[in-house]
Amino acid sequence: MSEETLRTEVAICVRMLEYLGLIDFSGHVSCRIPGTNTLFINSWGASRHGLGPADIVKSDMEGNPLEKGVILPSEKYIHTSVYRFRPDINAVAHLHPPVTTALSAAGKEYVPVMHHGAIFHTGVSVYDDCRHANSVERGDAIATALGPRRATIMRGHGAVVAAESVMGVFFGSVYLEDNAKKLAHVYMMGGKPQVLREDELQASKKIWRQDQFDKVWNYYQETSGVKFS
Ligand SMILES: [Zn+2]
Image (cartoon, protein in one colour):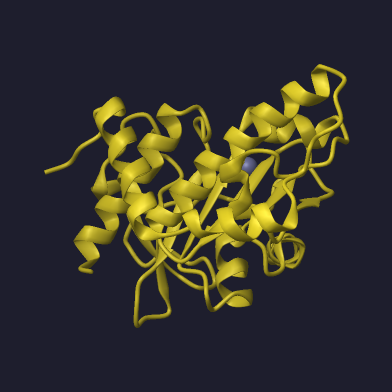
């Protein structure tokens, strides 16, 4: 995949996450640039509502911008630490998803209750610090909380989703919040969450695949109208 295609994918991902109310004005998405020790991430200043491929900028793995006049998000360390800790991960999103975050603020356990929630069969951890991850130490602490999982929740702040690709990180972000919304309703009804059984998790986790990523990505590209060509 060319660098231009990657920049475009990251830009589309940020715009669709903003469209879905998952990223607001300050979240970010990054991806590794294959075969290099660098990454692409949306710049600090570009509006998440209107940014395009030109606002996706290059950084080294220490969080130093590699393009002139560019300011990176202050929480860039989330990305650099996750890439350092997880060689299997090629895309990272830092979101501010309202319901997922509210569950953590309420001290409610995040568990998979919906079919698609099975993609989190290895669990969703909670990083117990709401402050900005604006240092290597905090980035490393978040990567540690994430461990081998696909997502961790930053209590009272947001979430981090990690995947093998940008489309995968979008898919994971959509279903992290989707499962949270239904789970929150269960808690509000006073019900006990019916956590997916092991056999259900094993069967349903198979939805983590490219044709499913494409389906969800294409659907939201159509509904959001986000397109660069
Ligand atoms: Zn944040």
